[in-house]
Length: 139
Length: 148
Image (cartoon, rainbow over all chains, first blue to last red; front, side, top):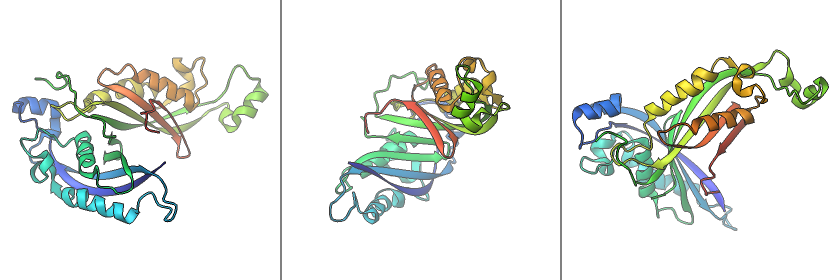
């Protein structure tokens, strides 16, 4: 078994808001992140897959194919978008606030079962160089 | 309801935050002779000490709170790190601190001290502490995550 990690980047806007709370409570808990005009980040995504090395190709997965899957499933949906307003899993009514943790979970759900010949091991999302979230599919 | 008041059974995720601090130290053990200290610690035994820009990465793990979408309140973690880590160690000579009175301030021991200290954080479980001494050396203590 070997782990392989592919990186991708996307830039998105978001804000934190719990619809079940009052405006005052949202501002108290989320502070500047609750600004409804949104703010943004350059996110870095690291997707780690686990698998066996193919005896013929020497690959766990074809990196070009993995790159295309990340592009299709994640980057094309998130990049230069407002996560709350333009991405289905974070839309009003879902209760899914686009925190770094929830973005990692959402990306896991987008990728699970879509990577041939390897098992999704970890989704890591950097919001900034000094802050990231990891999700290993634990429910 | 206030954030964090709900008991969440959501998916389990990890959040890592990186802090930076600069400190000096000298590696020297009273158990060794002067010659042995020089032999074991080499340049790091320089009597006047030397310093590093340390990067300290702290990982918390737990269920994502359904109301906040968060594993823990980052403000609380930053505040804990500010008072217990940065204000205590940043800009200091590690050898002069109580923690290292009888403990050689190698980064292994520094990591143990910081890991133990973060077990006192109540906002979430700290599962891992990783400290980078230089770009070539880093040390970590934590749960294995059971994932190899």
